[in-house]
Amino acid sequence: MKRFGFSIFVVVLASLLVLACAKQIALTGGKKDVTPPEMQVASPANGSTNFSSKRIVVKFNEYITLNDVSSKLIVSPPMEEKPVAVVSGKKLKITLNPSQLKPNTTYCLNFNDAVADINENNALNSFVYAFSTGDDIDSLSFAGTVFDAFTRKPVDDAWVMLYSDFSDTAVSTTMPDYITKVNKQGNFRINFVAENDYKIFALRDNNSNFMFDLPEESIAFIDSTFRPSVEISYDTLKSKKDTLTDSIVTKSHFLPDDIKMLIFKEDKTPQFFKSSKRLKRNRFEFVFNFTQYEKYKFTVPGDDSAFVWAKENPDTVFLWLKDTALIASDTLKILAEYVDPAFPDSVHNDTLKFRKQDKLFADTVLTMKLSKEKRPDADYCISFSLPIESFDTSLLKLYGAVDTLFEEMDFKVEKDSSCPLNLRVVAEIAEGRKYKIVADSAFATCIYGYASMPDSVEVVPMRETDFGALKVLFQDDKPYLVELLQSDKVKARSAVADRQVSFVYLSPGKYDIRIINDENANGRWDTGDYTQHRQAEDVFYYPQPYEIRSSWEHEVTIENN
Image (cartoon, rainbow, N blue to C red; front, top):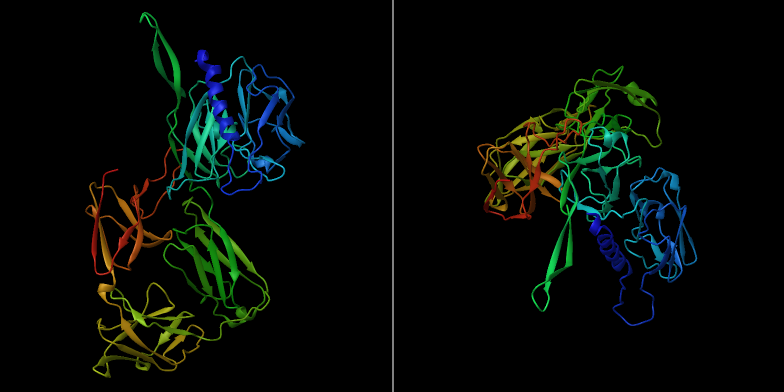
């Protein structure tokens, strides 16, 4: 490897400098400067060996400035004290502490696009200064891409680190041997790496210490090790007498060059309330920091009848006070008890205190919304602004159109078990026919005794042909969970049974199809756990958005993965 060490370093460094110094040509005429600065000379020279200097001076061909150098300068391997870079005219002056340098180690100072000319701010892309404290410049490299383990989209805020220490605690307790940061496309390249075996990690480093030591930090890891290498291509030239053969190097291919890493945040962040608000004197909102899959309970001292509601597996819980004295009180406390999804054996007990706020009023009116539409797969729904205590069916009328007249119809009203703000009207409502719903005063009464106001609406049921259907077929028996998304929002979700799943009554439009290998069959995606060497549950997407057309029954087959 040493035979080619310096020549390969020259190839790598020259490539970086060519990219850094490439001229940008304006599309239109004019004399505006669009050319980034060019390095003229460095002292010590770029690529120096047996380095021991305290100061580096790099001279450019024009006056320069530094843009956000504190965050853009990446030093690999990391130093305990980061080098300090300042500008003096056309010179970039770098000061470092040589006593912190490891022996026989190649260091890379990557300024990314921090260096720019002072007039037009034309940035010099990927400017790199490298040196070695030993006799040789290490010249191998690692390259790849970091993706979010759930969305499978490239990330732009992760560090990639190499460790020659294979202990499980190395990434949490020691600095990496080499480090770099991904670009906006999630791609990374670590240059000037010594020939050795390494483990590779990616990290969202919240406290900027290059160690995985906070529960909020995200990590990607690969259990196997990598050894960088280079493949060299040769062209063979023969002498005139065909007795001697000479070879010249034509291409160097550095490996590994396509590492794919999936980064995730472990389910080890304790559950807590991200916010708790007194929206009105009688109404409160509690927002968890992530979905609450386990049991929870809210208690208001002095108000045993306080009303609590949330959707299944909620992020947000709502509470309505019933006691009039507490509603009028400026200060009060609410007790919350909940099991932590990340630590199911632990129970949290929080006391949430609320004080007087400006413009804080109680709900004093019950509003009602009568929809003009009815889906073919659901009962007609009447929604209210407050939880409903009771209703009087005799004060609601349903009429169906016959020719030009409306005739009264039979129906019944039920509370919606999934939402206390809704009532369901159960009736034989067919498509292709107009209907009218008339609600008299006091048809419904809320938990505070407020009665609904009169209202009426004509209803046109949506047709089954207004919707499409999708069947997703699989070739294996894994416990997949299929989600249909629009603008990253889940519109439908279902678990696979008998190698297939069907979605009906889908609104026309394009959907992303996300497939989760729900290994523990708990109906949701689970992250990985580094200490247990468990990766996040596998997620993959249908190659392109799938368009659902009205009155069509669609079918797609997912190939084995």
